[in-house]
Image 1 (cartoon, helix red, strand yellow):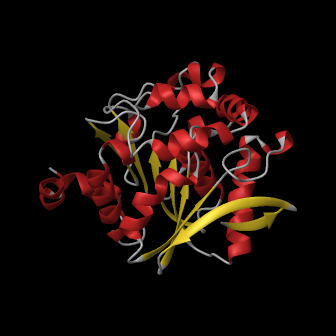
Image 2 (tube, one colour; image 1 turned 60 degrees about the vertical axis):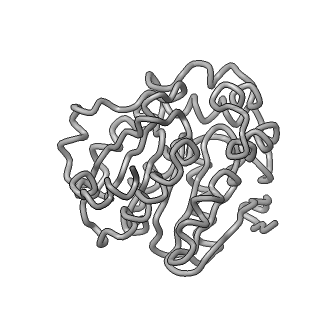
Image 3 (tube, rainbow, N blue to C red; image 1 turned 135 degrees about the vertical axis):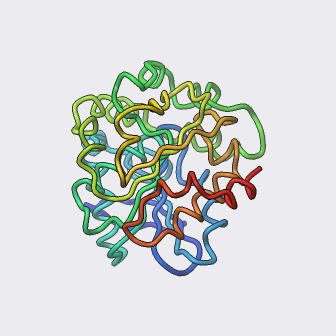
Length: 262
């Protein structure tokens, strides 16, 4: 187990591969662990880091650090301690919100963002995330299988207060406006049957922005990286292969990609 001290508190992370830095940020249910298959898929060309946010997994539990701003500061501190400059962020749920807001505040640091099951606003987040325990949420959002076991195993490690604080902050943050102010290329990925975070409108204003693209996985729930893993990994690899600053909207036009993931 790898750890780093940030603000004199233990932050747990794991790393695979060599190459350009890529950081995975987990969501409200689980920990770094469910990113392992994706990390393995990109490890030939990327140094893939996955860390536990404050209050999750094996990172320190401290209620004063559970705000959205403090989670964003955790990412900043992690980059500093690891000596990482320009980086790619891949976030899921809570991690997606953190990635988008971090990119908004640090456009010179973040090369691109993949935001999975990202809450566009508080209204799109299920109220059940506020009231259910971490273990109950894991049972609700996925069935029992070998793929979902990492999420179910680490769910009880979550401090419920970390869930409540971060979801409350979604409504108070600038995230509603962030998407329209974001200059960093950003690919949004959502599961059509996600009960926790409603997918964005496919004919909404975000679809008109050059640097933003949204894709719906039609056989997925809240965890597209587990529900349709081969398709997700292929999409991520192609997204990473785009030139810096290039629009992710090109991905919808690549018939080669479509054939590979069927």
